[in-house]
Image (cartoon, rainbow, N blue to C red; front, side, top):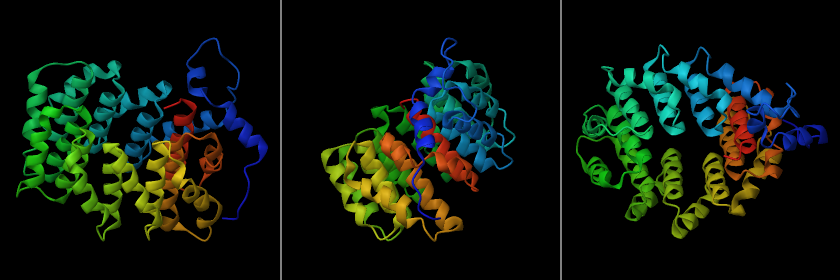
Length: 332
């Protein structure tokens, strides 16, 4: 892709779209409501993606709606609770909890009666986030983390972290050490302990960050990010020199989330130079991380990179560009 500057017209449109999502929710504000504004284009992309034939794309759309916090899109979450694919229903139930979307409570109650344990624990999470206090909701999550099914146990570990209930840290430590746990459950337990601000997990995060596997190093960065300490911030900075571009971009993005611009050059260098000559998955994977890094920064200067990717050939790229624009517009 040849280097180019975002023209002033597109830049002005993006700046005008700040708070656009909120403006569209108001009956009195009509300005900047052009169908061609970046915010409106982004909404249409996520609406379409939520109904895509690919379950993975639908799940990506659900996550992006949660990220954007744009209430106009919440009904797409509600609709996804009846998706024919169980993994999508799981993601939708988690989204209801993340958003505390009360309009979906009745559907989530029905989902809680599912025979599928993943759906059941996702529904339990949503109901707890909606203010439910039934001990049965806690019980199914506690039971699930002890499952021999690695997907169920890892999902339960994730939910415990998202709930932020520190009394369950012992369960996560058990899952981390249990012979029955596989790598997926152990890594999720480490991340969730970090989400609970258990500072001693920093040694586990360091172990991930020095792994030979790039995916492990990414999870190490994310774990350090959840810890949110001075030491974890400095640990993330060490990954800006990683040999893998995607790892560097994840590190730069999480630093931006800390309002630390140490990694900003990694992001701008990618868009201005590194992306040249990349194609296929070798282009998509780092580009998605770069777009997410811009979203974490919420910098209007970096946001100028986003609009051009709303029309990218790759739908995943379009989704992440849309999520970034709406997130910045909505101040989330």
